Amino acid sequence: MLVIDGHLDLAMNALNWNRDLKKRVSEIRRAESGMKGKGRGMNTVSLPEMKRGEVCACLATLIARVRRGKVDGYASKEIAYAAAHGQLAYYRILEAQGLIRMIRSNMDLKVHVEGWLKSPEQNPIGVILSMEGADPILDPDHLEYWWDIGLRVLSLTHYGENDYAHGTGSQGGLKPLGRKLLEAMYSLGMVLDVTHLSEESFWDALEAFQGHIIASHSNCRALVPGDRQLSDEQIKALIERDAVIGVALDAWMLYPGWIKGVTSNEVVSLEAVADQIEHIVDLAGDTRHVAIGSDLDGGFGKEQCPHDLDTIADLQKIPSILKKRGYSDQDIRNVMYENWLRKFGEALPTKG
Image (cartoon, rainbow, N blue to C red; front, side):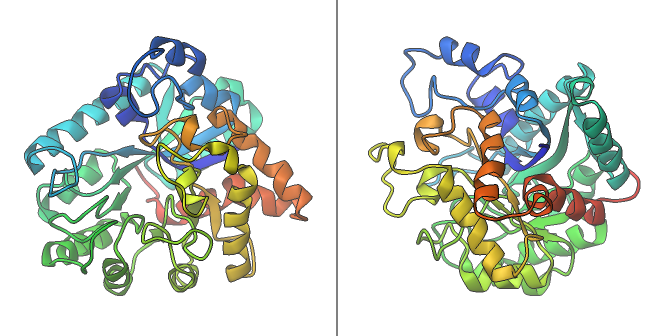
């Protein structure tokens, strides 16, 4: 079954982790064998593995946050701006080599998915360009530049606060520049990703922004407590706005009390991913608002994933789990790819 993944940090893995994503996962693991550091030698994502797992498209990120307080990152927005362009260059090279296809319009997406349904082996992986945290945007007046080079989805923050809003682990609402940035996003037709917004900033953003909204990789606070997750009230508000929520596979977002670097992934399986999906379905009353936003290799490896997932190709285990829980074939297609297809069919411009 086709998969559209709502969140993959492909360029970050290439540039920050020095991983050649054209190679097989096994080759990357061998190259990192003996390296110290979280996730080394345990990656789950590469382009060949995405193809094997029928991940026909994804939201692929530019991520370059500015250092503030305890939040690590670059020393200035100017440096973050330059780093994001390095990641953009990586995607452009992959596209020139025929390995990915940049998706800028709803027609691009429609034609791309139709091609995969007919002949997956003959089509590259589709990429909708997303930015996780708006630090590389020097000023809201500069957003049109990013739109013109293909950026279609933007989240305001990552961890901590920035010039635009407050994010995970911080408290506070939108800042004046954040409101101005949302105005610019709406005028261009850019999609707002509410992932990582603090509680106050989340509600401010929903009130201030009337365009298309998603939560690319967010789980349920009712199942796993913490401000990184969405409360039921937030999920219901997103459903009212016809948003799609991508469920993440990071184990600390799937298992209450997970301690990074200590808890074994043997305690969590892909059944926990299905639990997250099911909770959103229960709140919505249908399967139209939940999808996959795996965040695989988002700074961790298989040691911090469900134990029955070795690579991204194992997303293909989710349909059988949902089938056993009584979900119809159409419901499963919704979760695996059709909800993202519908949402971006509505949200992306008619011309690239």
